[in-house]
Image (cartoon, one colour):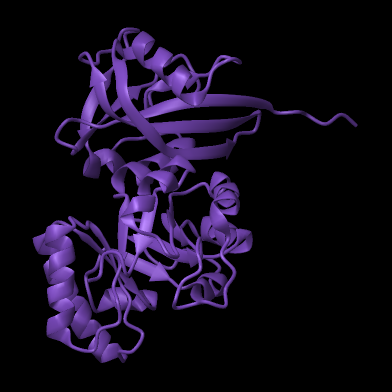
Length: 318
């Protein structure tokens, strides 16, 4: 019995960011091709001799009439279709020369990032949507006994560090105390345009109108389906391939992966290092934040090996 060998297609795609950092360029696929009429991020198939960035530069010149000046890796997505295996090699383009237009007759449009969910995309593009909408820094709050001190530290991180994604971690508080702190944190996050995720049971969203839930690895492995609505962020702590696979099954929007380095809080846990981290990220299929001894000096390295960015307590909480 013959076994069908799927075609392997390597595609470079661009998330082109506007000068105000609030819009991204998308293009409509022609009606006579696969997924015709759906929207996508501009790009195309690589030639055998091209790297991802080389192919992307060629494609954007041919499709949009622009020249890439500055770009960095955003996410790599493997997606299985019935007849082919697609690798989407996605780059975030921060600077370019020229005014993009549809040189091949395709419709192109600058769309506010928070409105991307209103446009129909091929299934393989969904992790890219999440990556585009997420920041590159993820603050995990420290354990603080005093509410006023907690608020002062969070307000400073939001104002001075421009943090836009926060996980409220407060294991020393009982549920009532946690809810009180969560409401305070949500007020501050709303004032600064940041998203707040609660580290706890999904039912906490019935008490606090936060933006999502962060699952511990223990909670993650006990679930058999996504525990919250699609319109809320769902993230999880992961430490290995099994947990990353479970996060994908549940439809997590993004994860933290740790420990990349040895940390004071878990000195007994062996760090995975950059090489093993990159291997896990390659097949994650969703945005991954590097966690464990990370500082802002590691952000570019993390992006270079495929991470969304870094997650940290100590580097942002001071």
